[in-house]
Image (cartoon, rainbow, N blue to C red; front, side, top):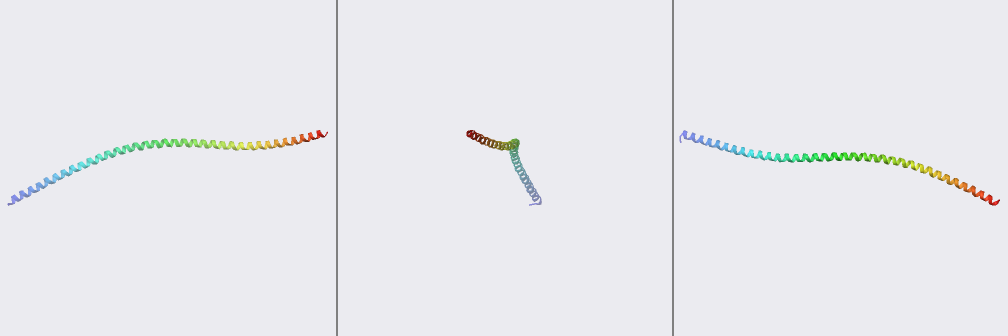
Length: 130
């Protein structure tokens, strides 16, 4: 084999190798493109899920805000009830004082009535003796 033939054979082998490398590169490029497209599809799915979760979180935030409002209203009602209970306690204390005064007055009246009865009995006794 001559140098020319060897050079042609070598050049053909290099050319075939380059063609094979280019074919491999194209195949790898195709695989990479498919993988990128697959990842893009997954990202789209995840984006949809994130959007749905964002909507759910927004609804939950609204519900929490409504619950906070209800709790605030309940706190106000409880505060008013506490004020009413305190007012009732004050009234009850005043009423207890009034009851004690009335009981003292009643005892005093009973004592006075008893004294009057004693006086009347003694007058009756004196009248019966005379």
